[in-house]
Image (cartoon, rainbow, N blue to C red; front, side):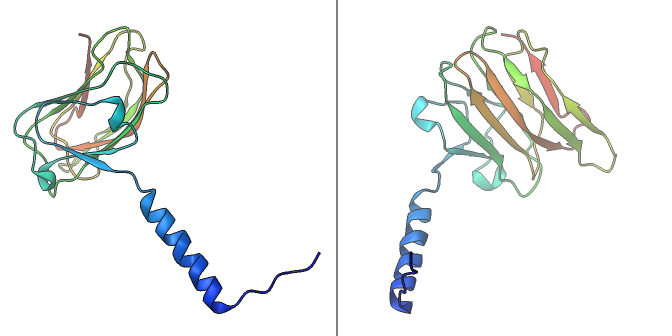
Length: 165
């Protein structure tokens, strides 16, 4: 077996093709400024919310679609300061509850840091209170439940609350 020699022109061409391919594979995004319902077609998109993305008009509910195996969403707060409003993520049913946890950090000078977990049996609503820069949440669905991981930054001492329907 030998090695194949290629010229600089071919090498540059291959690099350009690879770069173009990577650019086209970037996930799309969706901006949320008011109550919204995600669809299966939104799976894989980055969901942007926050002041730099037109801001939340008021306390906002983001409803997840019917639980389907393989759905995935990445939420990112894009504000330059803390939002004045809250974001609620709703699975739509207590039988499709959250599993996992979120790291919460109080940004107003205290060292209030905690990990928040749902009750693993019925918590189907997640409330993110006045999110700030650095907040992100990933959601995956196994066909029944929603798994989550992420970090919430807020000037509120309790950044995250859970609720049933």
